[in-house]
Amino acid sequence: MELERLRAITARYAVVRVALIGDIALDRYLHIDPALAETSIETGLPVHNVVAVRPQPGAGGNVLANLAALGPGALAAVGFAGEDGEGMELRRALASLGVDLTHFLTRRDRMTFTYTKPLIIRPGRPPEELSRIDIRSRTPTPPDLEDDLIAGLSARVAAADVIVAMDQVPEPANGVLTRRVKAAVADLARAHPEKIFIADSRTQIGDFAAVRIKTNRSELARHFGVEEARADVQALALRWSGEIGRDVFVTCADEGIVVASGGRVTHIPGIPAAPPIDVVGAGDAVLAHIAMALAAGATAVEAAELGNLAGAVVVKKIGTTGTATVGELAAKLSSL
Image 1: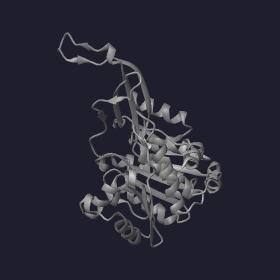
Image 2: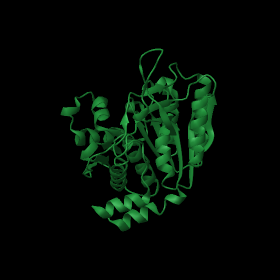
Image 3: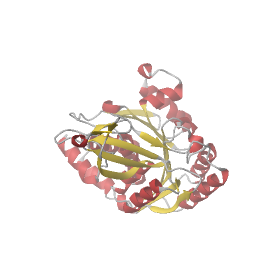
């Protein structure tokens, strides 16, 4: 892609209206100073002393952060959090991004989806992440909450150019995008063919219908029931795109992105990144940039190229799920 074309596409971002429905989490980073290590008198176990707490949106919230970094005309979230401290932190973090939270629901009977990430911070060295602590609801999403989510999504679709569905909870029945809610997404996509619908999922991408697909190589292989090492990514992406009649984007780590669209398949080569790198959240950045580019009139291949640039930017942001701005994309493209 030429720099002039990148600027032409991204110049339209200021009028793009985006809605995201999905599992929006809180990433709660705990900065631990190893120089303050102690041993508990009561248990004899090591004590990690936290010197800073850094809350930021994660999972679908990280997609929202990446979308916000691109300066859309409007940005709204459909989902839920618990009536708890984590939920308060998450709503505050989302509000700071300018996200419309009208249909981001607070429920006393649900837990806020939270990734707690302890980090050992040593001067002059990349952060070292310890074992993560996860919080999420372990029971099925109640039918009345599904009703409210579907109603909220329906209201948002009318005022959006692009709708992103982000399925992150390993047990979808316990999250936002339950089977019923996914069916509603498909119905709305069929009813509004003029709008961009694109979905990503941690474990159940095959449950989506009537939408564009963004996935990765291992999820693609799982969808078709083949071993990842033996998967022909281009052939499978082309097959899937043909079956659903919509674009399929497959991220392949440092090998780049494969995009199948209109009966053709294209491989966008990976962009080399010298260590250290941090791949956490890179797929979220790719999804956000593909969605925005498509809504701004980019072709599927151009959208994949912009997503590829975004991935190369964020993997160099260590110890965080970073974002990539238009300026950073332009700088990365100019450096190639």
